[in-house]
Image 1 (cartoon, rainbow, N blue to C red):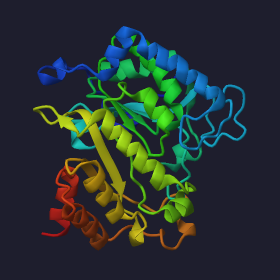
Image 2: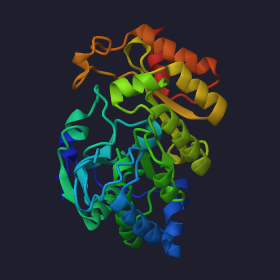
Image 3: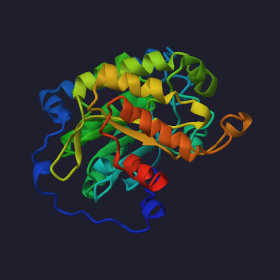
Image 4: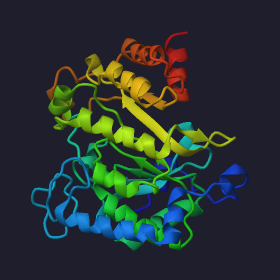
Length: 337
């Protein structure tokens, strides 16, 4: 089982506490499927997809049970986990006061040259885990009192997640699930996740196909990403919060502002406002750093400016998006008093 790096991330051990109120009355979507036997069937079908893999938008069509040759995500039959633990750096509605129960999967189905987690996504640092071990991780996060199970970079391990989830549900898992993806997800995978995932949290990285091709080697990213976000919203709707502002179900979109307008913020927020919902919860992120191979591209080789971030928040508001993450509003106040 992967090393639990809670002490490294947070410095102190978090003990479980009783949870009361509205959150205890919430039943995550997957429990109904588990009780009916449908979750086990979804896991079985997903496992078959690994033999001619279409479980992300790469469509490698490789038998991942037999070889990694030609597999973009470089992940075989078993998921690889880098680390797991309560995370207090996520959006407030996810982290709450007990943390979001994050599981960082190694490798990725994208190839972003500026990857902010390149040691995990490009180098694949981590350990393989069987379904029972991944189920143990989920249950341990629940025992720590986390508000949710947050799968980070899950697009290439949908089959492994479903197999582990059925085991964990049988053993008492009852937390909502967060699907925290790069937004490059196939309709085949999302169909298997319908009624399983409570909170979809995709990236919308780009507004223009040529830039997605250049910087993430995904020429069809915009088309795929928009279709995925539509389907995610169809499944779970706008983000719903408890009385104490903890996310229960719905869509939360992340958009990382890149230097020189490369992320295409206006196209992204226009799509969300006009084709998804003006009630979409959006986190416009300002933490870009020129990591990994960004130095090879002069236009990416710097942090964003205050003006660039201000413009991104302003354009989101101009399209009627009002549910911006609190840190967007705080940054606005701090940067522009």
